[in-house]
Length: 209
Image 1: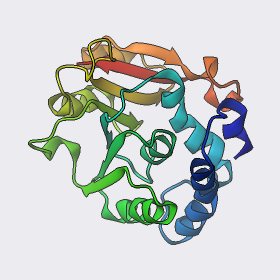
Image 2 (image 1 turned 45 degrees about the vertical axis):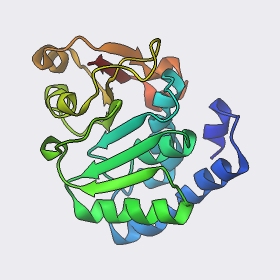
Image 3 (image 1 turned 135 degrees about the vertical axis):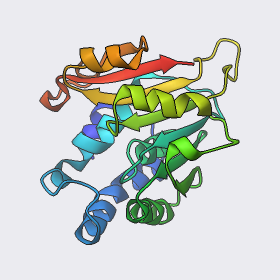
Image 4 (image 1 turned 90 degrees about the vertical axis):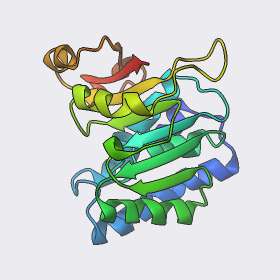
């Protein structure tokens, strides 16, 4: 928890309590359903929560923005972002029902009111539009963009707002992956935001609609 407070400070007591609850909840659920690598669970706040919050450090969203988390797995980056941005709405989707079971239990336990969930693949969603899609290393950029582009609105909520787009967390050498995607993402190095060694060669990619 301290590592979150190292970089972010303006939380309400409700938000602080929600962040504090995550450790116990994830450790408990991880014993039943493995949603986080056993070797990573002790690094939950750095490797999963702070990593997710790099999006909050790098982007500003208009109040009321709707964001879809594609392949949310155990709820990352969606749950930490929903705690950080109570004024935004998040839709967390995954093709694995058992992982969403964990997400839904954690959402209920923490009292989060700005998260909805759906058990399906993002590419089959019809009739819904979002301001942004977020994702954490669940598929190549080419696929993430193919799935998210049809789900994105064409214009920002406000005239000077950030254009709708895909924001994804990636790591390693991305040159080939970016080339194959046919996109020209804005690339941000996370270790320029957070100094911990874990964030070396980890990136935020933003592809606008």
